[in-house]
Image 1: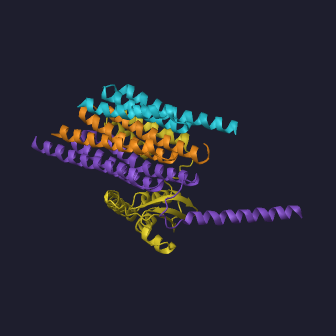
Image 2: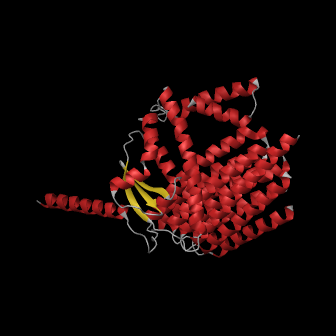
Image 3: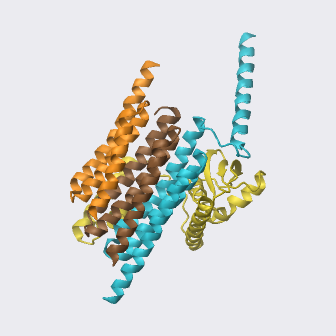
Amino acid sequence: MANTLIFIAISITLLSLLISLYRFIAGPEKANRIIAFDVMSVSTIALIAFISVLNKRIIYLDVALIYGILGFIGVLIIARYIEKGL
Amino acid sequence: MFITLMLAWLLLNNSLQTEVIITGAIISLILPWLFCGKCEVFTYLRITPKALLYSVLFIFTFLTELIKANFDMAYRVLSPSLPINPGIVEVKTKLKSKIGRVILADSITLTPGTFTLDLKDDSMFIHWVDVKSTDLEKSTQLIVNKFEKYLEVMYG
Amino acid sequence: MFIAIAIILAIVSIAGAIMAIHHKKLSVAIIASGLVSLTASVMFLLLAAPDVALTEASIGSGLTTIIFFYALNKIRNNHD
Amino acid sequence: MSENNWNEIIGGFIAIGGSLFLVLGSIGLVRMPDAYNRIQAGTKASTLGTILSLTGIIFIVPDWFGKLLLLILFVLITNPVSSHVLARAAYYTKVPLTGITKVDKLKETLEVEESRKAHLKKVRIQKEEE
């Protein structure tokens, strides 16, 4: 039962990933693409957590933690580069 | 700082064996001593019963505002005519300490329809999806005051 | 059902890769390559290799993006 | 056993609600007219969506409480900061606002500061010439 519900949640999250991919491809400026990248990396954290529940292994959550830290630092560095150049 | 690092280590390991606790204590003693000389983040924090009560109230208010914000955003996104009315307004704050301002700006970002765009001395510039008034006083009262009364007690 | 997840991830990854090759601006290409390594890491996770996924996440998505932007900054400063 | 089952079902529905909020965030990302409104929709919906999903996973597997709580706190702290940094970078590189924007107080303040700086510079140049 729980596996079915988690699978439905995974497919909805993948749908959200595809919709924000449209904004990533079509975004008219650099800033729009970075917003789409940010939203995609946050929803990837949720996706990894769902996959770790399906496989019942806690070590998969470490990958989500690393993504949380490094995606944040990456967005900070990109925004600073755009604003005034590192 | 020591308490924060230790708590993060214990949550990360999820166990209470003696080796884990000893290793975490040593590392979280060494790290603040090496990397932050003054650690002025927690010096403004007041530890009194009233402040603790107000911080619990603040978290409660914040969570309800977050959920309200999301339903508001869902209504705006899903309605076919896209009812938005955006603009950038200016807002004054009374908080003095840096960490209080940071928490105020973060919680403004997560409330319905507003987010912080820039911060100069004691005025914040806020992008608002549905502008109700362009006046400084009135927008301050609408946006800031519901968080400020808690944060003022917590940080001063 | 793992195949469905893998197919959608592959679509995202291929779109990112094509964009990384064909776009004119360098910074957009770097962000697109970060997207490719993001999906590649989830793919490794689906294939039950968490250590490879961890390395791919930290190196591909974090370190490569930061170092590329650092290099781009150096180039832009020298040639202006 | 039955109690455990109920836990799993409640957690699964909370997780589905979270992923629905993620989809709403992406739809907002596509439909909104300019970059700032896109930041509004994307950040709020993705924050609450991720928090709800991780809370549902706490209901399903209560043993993983520690790491999931750490992840929730991390998302809650870093997401507003990154949206603020992005918005500031977009504003100072002059990404255009949409046509129906009503007021722009920050532009007025910046113009006042610019004119004051230019005035000070002029005064200093005059003093040096004298």
